[in-house]
Image 1 (cartoon, rainbow, N blue to C red):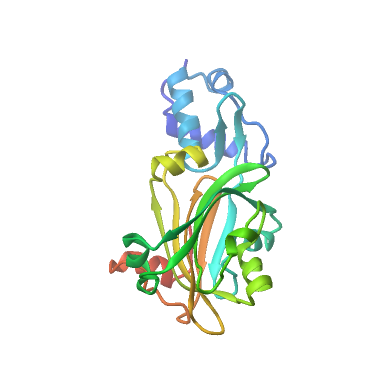
Image 2 (image 1 turned 60 degrees about the horizontal axis):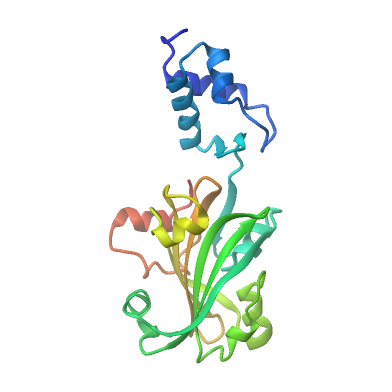
Length: 258
């Protein structure tokens, strides 16, 4: 047994070996790594965990380890504030499934993120995001009743909110502001997306492009092991929803791939 090999060197060797495999292909198991590289089981486990941290592989409990595919999600001037439409542009079919729909009055948190929502009545729509029937994200859309009265009756599984607002209410939804951070999801979200690892946390304010009136406050969580976020836009989109920290502003103001 060659314990001179560290788990990092084993991880690098495995990564080189699986580079030619197709996305989604099965990778060596812990037992395979023990036999192939002559290391202990703890070292083999640590090597596979390291590859999972690098997003090179995905480990599915009860199924095995597979070559990972991170799907690009772009945010920018040329991209509509719609997950299904954005993923469709890279050939991925994403769908939403309704978790809950409720009518609420804007709370302190909503008005902090968007002062225009003060005293507003909102339709709050919670949905999970699925790709290939796997839940990869969760989002909440809070839509003002004053601009989209009766919107809850139109909400169904797989409905694009942006298309719904355009078709029923004649609203051309555009981003006014967006923030992107990497955070640990709250327990209520982690149960839905099945991870306690850091996830992309997106918070944005969307407006009617014609009237510039605020229509929607959106908050979503996306699994970082499944989604790669790319942000690219110019000064026509403000960063007013961001905090004052310059590093956070830099995430939004420059083109980034993470």
